[in-house]
Image (cartoon, each protein chain N blue to C red):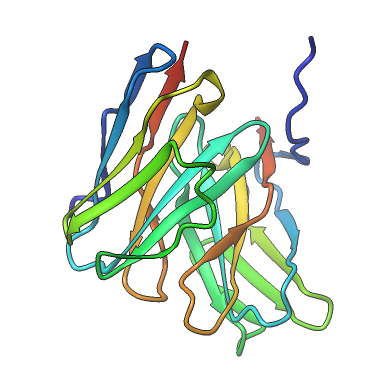
Length: 112
Length: 113
């Protein structure tokens, strides 16, 4: 079975540019999570969705970050405009409601 | 200038020995706990989980122990192998209707051949 799919796997961009990260959750999972991992702060939950509805976005750093889940098989995390301090690995995870979360391989973002 | 990052506790063991990784969790209302393994360049991988109505759960070469009195979780790995080298994270679910996990800072397990 395919796991959580993320794209792109690597992204290098310049400060001020828009960045869009994509995630396809495991089929049948109805919860989706976006995390950010850095050496400074570890693994942080940014936002999560249940049944395509955002439930908790308290971890979203600021208005430059936005996330959408237009359907059960696709989600995006957008950063506009990007800044060097946004450089991190961004993970998407999915689960059945209140069950184990399974992580994707991550997107390594470098903002110059 | 020098950057300051998280200080990851490190556990160094000899191949073949048993490993014990510890975790203190924060919320006495948490009712679900998970251990994840993260290898370099990869996403966290589920290892084993335990619910708060249990004290112990065993998997293949791994055992998780839960002590709710002192809010402590441990992961035991039997006959540690070089492929076990990774960062291990514990995570707690705060319970109730939330699906939110809170992750610990992680422990680096280094297996010496």
